[in-house]
Length: 262
Figure 1 (cartoon, rainbow, N blue to C red):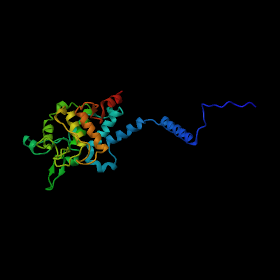
Figure 2 (figure 1 turned 180 degrees about the vertical axis):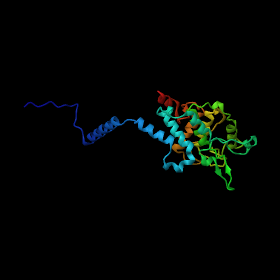
Figure 3 (figure 1 turned 45 degrees about the horizontal axis):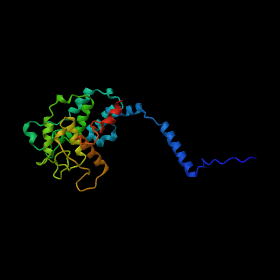
Figure 4 (figure 1 turned 180 degrees about the horizontal axis):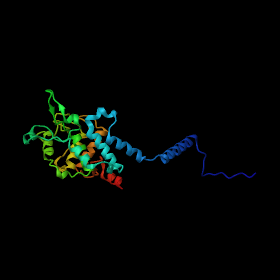
């Protein structure tokens, strides 16, 4: 029997190579079988929009934030037309805090949006009710929802909101004494509030009013990924050269948001 010539260009695979090949084949099959089940996710978002399950009871104070996730989620999956936009806008605007007169604008409080009914009508130590526990994070969520549903923000006088944001500043222009940013008066500073402040001003067309930075939760601490991310977004909102612009309604770059619309 004639000997077969040796194939010098090939070599038998080792057990390790075989295992790696099997893993790649398995991953390939999983990716091929996986798909975004849009209708099921849409059903979930609609359920969240209509009535939150009891598991969310402890999150009542964050109702506006949860609504932002639901409305923005519906927008991402292309089903914003399943909600009554005027009804949504009216509901969101009902959380706004107003100063009773011009004098209250200088009372040291911030008049933005309350995050929920429980924070909107909060009882004080004397048993009375205060209708202003507005917060910058809930204010951002409210304005983002209004913009997503196409509400004309120019139809509202936002001067009380913008003017009372000054109440969160120190005389030298900083917010907290350590140079950080607060969500409302007398709150500890936190770098992620740089995003809430910048995004609110950006949505209202007042993004040029602020200049800041920071990458850790508190001064003199090591930076972390969460607060660094919102620090980067904050600088992007300031149109820092070399940074991509941000779609504030989604918290992602404008380029990524544009790709979602295609």
